Length: 125
Image 1 (cartoon, helix red, strand yellow):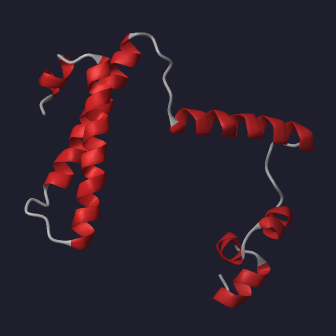
Image 2 (cartoon, rainbow, N blue to C red; image 1 turned 30 degrees about the vertical axis):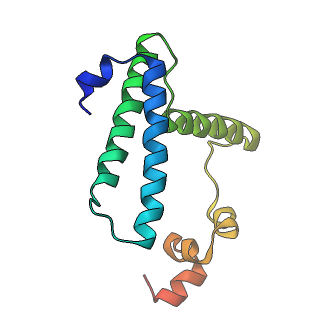
């Protein structure tokens, strides 16, 4: 299905088409597990069509003024909020001491961080 064809459909039609394709994909995945499919690439085409349909729905939502969402922006905001809160609570610049970090770190992280125990295991650095 071409994007130009999808753009001619209404939102309700696109949602119905997504549901149909997801059901077909579900059935094909089960058939693929039990027998060989005559057209195994059909799974790929269905997955891509579903992605195309979701993309066009998202484009329409953004054009209508829906807020942007994203893991990167949310994660960055959470890190900034945590850094501001943690830095002011300690009274420092937000950096942990080596001993505090070493206490909380896993053994592999200790080795990478250069703690004395990790340095002894890895040899003198």
